[in-house]
Image (cartoon, rainbow, N blue to C red; front, side, top):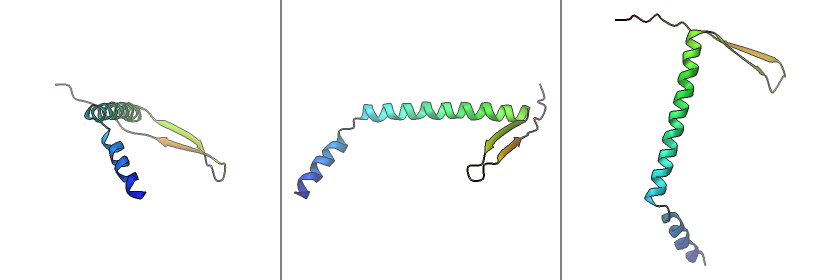
Length: 78
């Protein structure tokens, strides 16, 4: 009985076509691009002005304020 299950599982894993793999890779690439855009926007904002993140500790219930401050170097135009 166990031998009968193994071939059917192999057939199921072989059903994924190259088109499906390409579609999944395209979606993954788009998600990475979106993450890159969001991270870049946050970094630009941090470098230009301070950001404060306020959260509550799940263990003790205290409020936590985290301040992120960066220095933006002036760019030289040529």
